[in-house]
Length: 347
Ligand code: NAI
Ligand code: MG
Image (cartoon, rainbow, N blue to C red):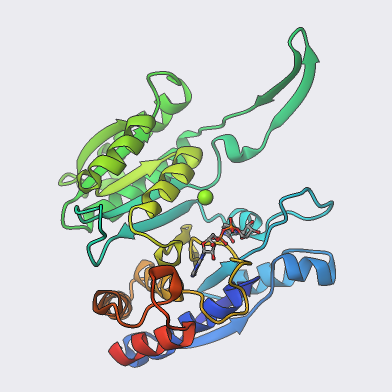
């Protein structure tokens, strides 16, 4: 048996860091089924070449041939371009990758942040304000803009289930539900109630009884995240709050070049470093590959290949703790390739 991995480096430094991740995966040897990499295209460059940012065959091959995928980063234009829409947003939708899971963990102690951070943000990926139903009308107040915020029992239930599953597998087994139901009692109320009900569902069968549950209003959650990040273990949030909290949490551990994520659904998982295409350093060979290698680890862990995932994480942690071979974003002077070599040596 082989493990078929769709590889979509996309734009900018995605093309420099994703190959590093595939080489790290290859170095795992028999800890995982033999990896088979399938090169696929998407992104801004693909759009300028072909007129579509996410070719149909990319989605088809992911669906029919791949077990999982690795995605780099896209360069989305900041102005509106007719016919262009972000391929990553479209992919999440096409493959129903309803959970965005982002672990944030400090390894070496960061000056100014003495408390070790070890948390996971689980963000609902399909609804909330991001259903993008916005309308603009003109009324007594001049222009009036309205947006629909959709929260469903189905989406809240499945993201809740994913969050409990992750929490129950961690040593602290603690889940914090992020919401603002003191103000938005209907939408956030439904999210909160639905997540809270997950451990009581017949199908969960007492599985999550040892997970402790806390709640935190989203504004004070950000405050506490910066003051006392150690109180958090797994955090689950609707789409918009999750987007903001996960970027805020990333700031706790230094460079964006360290933070991995996966987009996960019931049938597919796609690893993706959190950072963008970094046009300021593109082509210089100095992009930090560690976020991508960690994304590969997260993807493998989600598929149940814990031994392989542990090896990748341990190697990355060792390189960070050692602190000798680091890219410039971490105040080092090594290249992408040198950091990769340091990881491969640890593997
Ligand atoms: P960015 O994440 O690309 O860069 C922000 C800063 O962090 C830059 O100074 C960059 O050099 C640095 N950085 C990011 N990743 C790094 C790495 N691996 N190693 C070393 N340094 C790293 O965010 P920015 O500049 O706001 O966006 C640039 C482009 O990326 C835009 O077109 C944006 O739309 C896109 N983007 C795409 C994302 C995605 O594909 N999911 C996410 C965020 C932005
Ligand atoms: Mg974001």
